[in-house]
Image: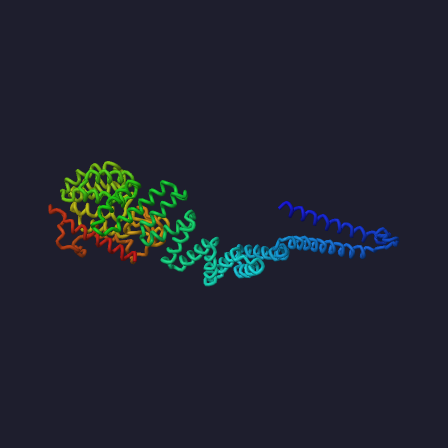
Length: 511
């Protein structure tokens, strides 16, 4: 770098001196000062400014030629003294300069998006340098830029032949197969690339993603351990993702002989990540199968402290499946008192009181959710409460009509693409992201409903307010439904039929 700077400074200084000298000669041409007198062997020669300029050019050319001949003489002497490559190095020096210049231009063309120019420059550089490991990568990337996948694949395959460039070739082919959707081949290439460079972060992530998509949970856990070992993954993130993989591995077990191992894996996943709700629910159910009900209670309560969820309530109910509604209501107190102000706790208490047919208490348990945080589930519970308290069918249908256009409430939503999933899964079915599902309320989307659907609550309310002998009688969809004012207990199947009907109507409207 310093030598190059010195040469540039000397060159600029010489050019400036020559320009000043010529300017001086031209300005003083008429006065005779511009003439130069040279004495050689007693003979005087008078030189005009033009002759001085031509002489300067000839002198520079002579010096350049002398330096070249001097370098050639030195190379020849070295060759005579036994250096067999001295002459070849001398003649190759100019070729290397042109080759590196072409390669530099190719890299600039590649960076500026000129793929075809980059290919041409890389070909020229290869002609002068004869080093494909330096030029093939530019050619491959430029071919991909212009959409010539076949040429890019040929170049990547050439890179496989050399040990120093084998990883680059495998990685390039892997990315090509991924782009083409050939995930089986891409997985094999990712495994080869990982074997060559196990510390490469991009290869680690790609291999982990492909193994998870193929449900190779055991292989994915080994890759995850490698990421932790090489320092590319924090330990807390490792514990969470390893728990997800262990849970996924346990969930895929269908053989009864491996059921015990699956339960142990779920328990271990819950221990590593207590906030992983599916792991807690599965671990609790596994402990119930083993007869360890106290351990199941402890797991559910610990998970409920982190995040109340319906699956945890279902697992807690499975601990005593044959108990009466009143006994279940009393047993669930140890769960509902953990986070009493959480909406899931309020809904759970309301549903337990509904099962016990204590409808006023169910209303009190629900609190103001119907006004402040209403969704389809809250409004369906309100419909069941009204039905249980003997309200008219018009009132019940009014609540169900509101549920038709209400949000669905918390669901398993992908944090990356906002896709809603009916059940938890380690991989998003839409964007294939790993461990991105969260139990949350999805963003409210614009849903096109049938004409008049938004008016349903108002219409039903109008029917209720104006019902008399002059209006058509409201026909109940279930003729066996008890009439208002009777003491007949509310049948669970009638309430479920009303709720399911509202949900089906909502689904059809959303479609």
